[in-house]
Amino acid sequence: MKKILSTLACGIVLATTASADFARVEMGAGAWMQKPSGEISYTDGVSSGSDKSLEKEETQNYAWLLIKHPVPIIPNLRVEYVSLKNTGEATGTFKNFTIPATSATSLEMTQFDIIPYYNILDNTFWITLDLGVDLKVMNMSYTADGVTIPGSTDTSYSDTTSIALPMLYARVRTEIPVTNIGVEADVKYVTSGSSTIYDARAKVDYTLDFFPVIQPALELGYRVQKIKIDEDSVDAKMDLDFSGVYAGLMLRF
Image 1 (cartoon, rainbow, N blue to C red):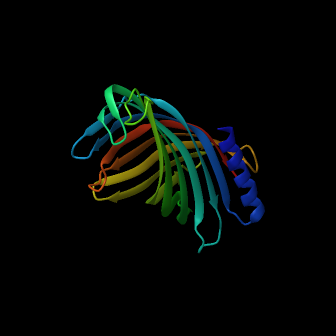
Image 2 (tube, rainbow, N blue to C red):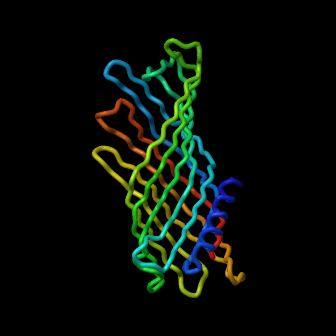
Image 3 (cartoon, one colour):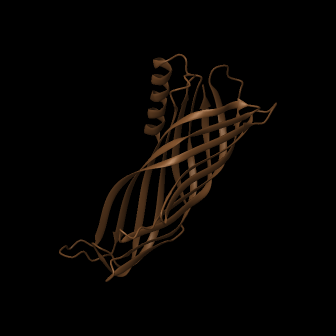
C-alpha cells in the first residue's frame, strides 16, 4: 500500500511540474470490503471441473489518480488500481490437473485501469459528466492445492495470466449546493456475445476545505464488479461477482 501511495504522490508532483495549467489533480486510496461469489468451470467434452466460490469476504486495497487540464482537444486522464481475491473449492478434472477430492483454491487479481476521458459537463449547474474509454489490464494468479498433476509429484498447481480489455467509461457527479458533499457514480462496461464485464461504483464524499491549496476529503461508497467469460472457443469459463462497501481518503489540488 505504501508503494502505491508513493507512486501516486510522484505522479502528482510530475504532473504539476510539467504544466502549471492543470485545472485539477485528485488522488485517493482506501480499502474495499468485497464479497466474491460465482464459479469457474472447465470442460473439454471429455473431462470437466468446477471451482465454486466460498463467498469469503476479503478486504483489498484500491487507489486512483485524476488529472484534468484545460486543453479541449486532449483527453483528461484517470488511472486506477485495485486488487481482488476469491477463495474457492474445486472438484473434477481440469486441463492440467485432476482433483481426487475437494481442493482449496485461490484466485488473486490485480487490475490497472487507464482511462482517457473528455469532460462533457464541468460542474455545470453542479453537474459533472465525463465520457471516455478504459483499458483495463487484469493480472490473474490461480492456485489449487491437493491435486494430481500428470508427470509430476507436485500436489499444488499454479498458473498466471494477463489480459487487457477495452471498455466504455462514464462518470457523473453532483455537488450539493452550500455543502461540502459530493455524490458520484461511474461505470466501465464491455460485452461481446455471451461475455460481459462491468465495474460500477456509487459514492458520497465530504471535502474538508479549511486548507487553502490541498483539500483532504473522505469517501464512502459501494462497488460491484462482474466478470463473465463464456465463449464457445475456450474450454474454461468464468462467472464471478465482487461487491461490497469501500472507504478511503482523498486529496484535491
